Image 1 (cartoon, rainbow, N blue to C red):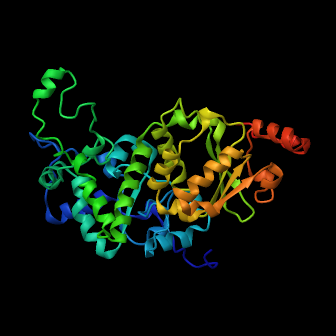
Image 2 (cartoon, one colour; image 1 turned 30 degrees about the horizontal axis):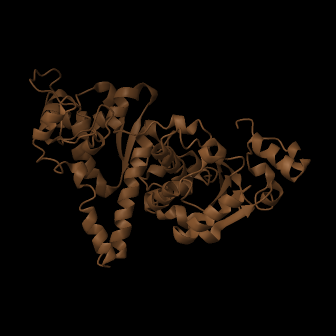
Image 3 (spheres, rainbow, N blue to C red; image 1 turned 120 degrees about the vertical axis):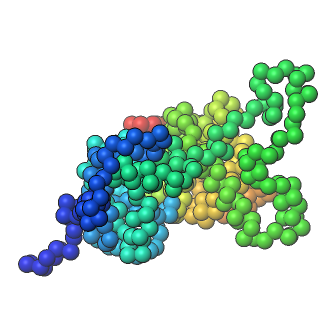
Length: 414
């Protein structure tokens, strides 16, 4: 809070000059008459619009000092980027900012074209070093006259994104067919005679490079640890992008994976309900994508997993190959920040399977597994009010270990 009587350090957006104001002043100084309706054969994809320009402000100053509704600032995926601008925003906003952060997709121009009526002003707050760059780039996307629109046209990049301003990546648009290189309507005979020389020339086919060569180098010890980590990160990022783009509502409706409260150490608790995973009826690759979609932001800090094996049968058993693939695909943060895996209501068979899997396949997980025979035992690590329990788990535990916990209220959503 500012001292009594002292001028406020914060800047009102309404007091800042608009993007068009400086241009008009420049026109008056040079005694030029702006062209309002010049006949042109080719129009810019970002045409001159007074209504949009009226919302734009280019201001040299600290964005954290703006008296505005929202601030959009670049950061890393976990929103922990350390730079002077980010630190200034967090310092002035207070500790609750991370819970309120939202990401704005698409370019500002396209967003204003679609949702402009919902915003009053958009301020580009820049440093002294950045100001000259923005002075050159803004006219490309926010021309202040028909004349400036025509002048800016040759300088627009070839790829300006889609209708929402998002980049268009050809690799995400390809369609993988049963017989690559053969048209869908081609017969088997025609397919044999088709020219397949272009197979492998597409960017998608080059994403991994020579996989066999990479594996051979790994076996020979010629591929460095840093190169291996970089390759794994690229692979995970592709899975993450696909998970964010895919419609996974059918997997989400199973309620097989969800976030609940925190354990006694304050770590996030994630629940996996084995009985809710109909392995033989769902696309397990989509299940893997859903796991990545849900867990990516959870795994940036310490967490624990609670797996309810309660009343599962052969149709709910996750295959060891699937678990190995999941373990290999996920980012290192998943393994590093997983502090405990509580295996609730295990059977003898599941214990044996888990022992073999964690001993010979993913040995790094073995010391983190804790077999839990009853909810009473689970509640010593996670308070009962911090975990949402499926009703059938409560009923089974009451039947097997006594009725004491049957009075504990189940989650209404499960």
